[in-house]
Amino acid sequence: MCHPSMCPSGGFSQPCCAANDQCGIIVMLLGGACVERNAPGSPDSSCPTLPLGQITVPGCCKPNGTCGFFDQALGLGCIDPTQIGQPPGRSCTP
Image (cartoon, rainbow, N blue to C red; front, side, top):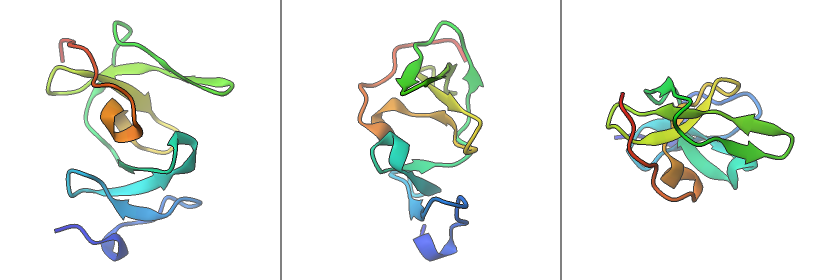
């Protein structure tokens, strides 16, 4: 069972427990969502990107065969779009 006090901080981000009971960090740039760190998945150009101000987060394919958004800067990995208030990702080939 996840407890925020057991999760490592992300430097400037607060630790939290993501919806899947894994440690995550609160990412203000993503609307204050608690996002799992090191989420599995690989960059995939067939998946849509996420524009965030002056940067664009590339798309990725999660092991369950759905698209997400790939973050390397914060070590989030392949983010499930529903974790950040986006619609579910479309199908892809992991």
